[in-house]
Image 1 (cartoon, rainbow, N blue to C red):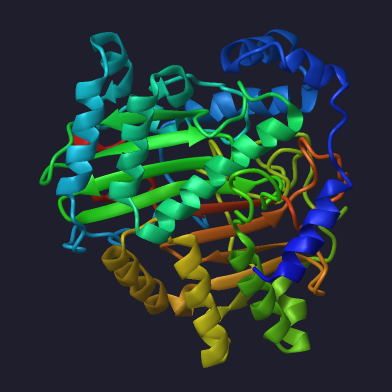
Image 2 (image 1 turned 135 degrees about the horizontal axis):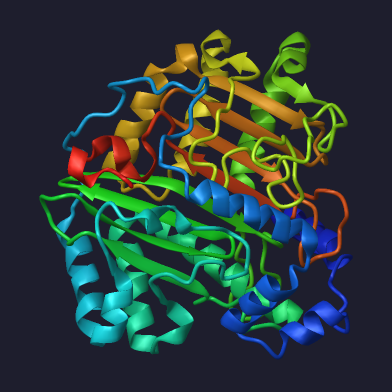
Length: 425
């Protein structure tokens, strides 16, 4: 990011710093993650989020089906294959975590390969489902071993992205003076199955603005769902000064939208405004097109079975240069995958360009906040600029970003790559 762009975002977000004397933050300063979550559940405050969590609870208990475009799973899209992933260091890293923990924590960490806790992740700062072990509740040595699991599992660039999200979460905790609720270790870590270089297994990590689900089968890896976000999306002071995240994804999407002919832009733009009155809002939070937490996202936490119809314009009708921008977007959204697996996945995405759609919500001037989605039978990427949650901006802004990766048609959590006895409950 250029210094000019950094300075502009800094100036914009600093206008919306929270009031530290607000009752919300004054009370939260006295709480840790668990007492903060208990207070939320007891008071139901804020009501809009409490209502959504009740909907999430119902969705969590539905049997897993998978996100689809019509309700029906397209079969035979995903097959076991050798993707060249070096699995041994990942297995060693997880086994080191297991060995470090005492028996009680080890029991919290380990789950069956098909356990429903795979689907328990959510991205608010509120610890809604305290499964696994929480990094800020264990000693530093064990927490660092868990970070090494991420480093061993991801590409170098993907690991840097995850660490950036965790550091920005820590930075937000400092801005709001609630470091026990939001910090670099305020994440839960779970292991599913037995780590193996042959048999299926996996792990997940979830917390505020970072949720990662990693399934491993031999030398193959599936990483979805993922949620990566940031508020603000830069660090402008302290030891991690200069950390920035999710800007490239936004710049690539905007470049693609601006490159389209005007009639194609009109076809891609599903709604002109980010909270458009034409958006479905029935009060049923399981189907509504907009809610205050997800905002424009359709595939967030607990939306494992949502029907998401194709919208926008076909990528196959774009120019080669525009199609390359879709590949570049894919690179960024799939950055967690090891290099060899990511290369294979991008080729698979290109092979489905005849059924890949690009859609847009909002304006597409240089300063506009926006949402876009890339969707095909094998991938969904969502990018959204949000209004403030801890910062006070009432309208979506380019300094608060959410991104989601989903693998539709039963591919999330590596479910399509599992044997029958290993499938999600």
